[in-house]
Length: 537
Image 1: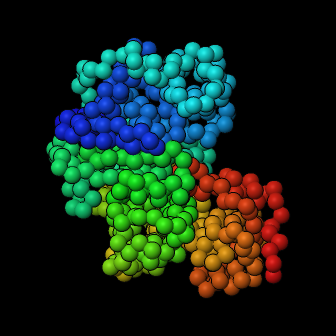
Image 2: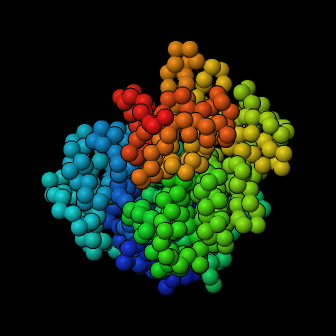
Image 3: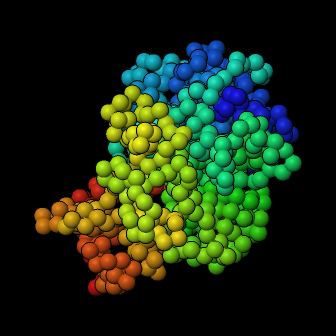
């Protein structure tokens, strides 16, 4: 068995060639056409120096071309490198160089930045440009128009055999520093994110045609909202293609357009990222008139729902099940939780761990699942090879526990009486105030449950006496100004006193990464440069 991303997509092509594979805006593309265009791009790249193991950057917003390009790269046994479209010149130059790119596929709107960076990355010798109706000039560095490249290349699937050992690299979002390339074998990442392990039974899928055959008679309509520069979105898309589903993309997150897309395409499963998407979506749904009767599942990956948002969804969309998947680029999925009208566990962020995930203490010893015990999550089984060109960080992230290799990303969790765990937060964002650990997610959830607060982000602020004090950046709802005293009283009803923010900044907008995750670097910079909020009493 190849158990390779390109092979798994090709299996679906062979079984449901005439089914719509991708929808984006007014365009749609069948599996057969997706295959043909990906083959053409693969042949073009091969003629221009891309070989097995070459690294090819993909620098674009969600689009049909981005999906084609990703599949084309894997057809050659090359490595697709995700490029964050919000990066500045210095960040791009770092990534292009660190990732050893030899080719790049980018949207035309980014031509000026690409032109500035190319002289500093001599390995990058070939560029293909996706037309996006902008007028940016790419002739100065010899960029090839995407459609021209396809028109001049072969549509045939005449590539050599591939391997489960082929390399998949995902660059992290860089929330706590420069991005790092997480290296996976294709089989390993497929098992933890792409359906290679049955999420219900935990058993390994043994037939590489299994997903495609399952989707032969019935394919779901899946809406993928996060940008595919992030792993959660990539694997929502790829997993859907493996099973012959139809993937619906939007180039930009706009809540009203999201609901129109759900209604127009009769979307059954929507993949989003936590409150950053869920909150504006549910408020738009409640304010408008949309038909979401087809929608059965809303799945949040990489970020979790707050209690308030869960309740709003269960009230407005009682037939929808909310799924919360926890994990990281270095672990894949480590657990999943479900909330519905029938199973209304909305009092905390609780999930059931999968069979390969354990909780360990500070010394790396596995903890027994006893109520109230707190430790760090560790994922075993199918895990990454390490970080690309970074043995030091690899050694710090991956540990041997009882003779097995585990990934330990630093996520803290607490065992509950029902056998589930409550995810507390990432250790490197934890606020240590007077010796007490405060996890930002818990405080943020308490703040966002106040009716005047739309979004919030919690950080540690230097304090001479406590070491750190809890600080909060708060975005109010339109035409609302939260009173500091009311916020304080409200939050104290939700969490212990030492967790209550001592410093508060009122901001026009909470800045988040394209994935929806908090931008802690922005938050800390803002706090350093601005006075605390002068909110009404």
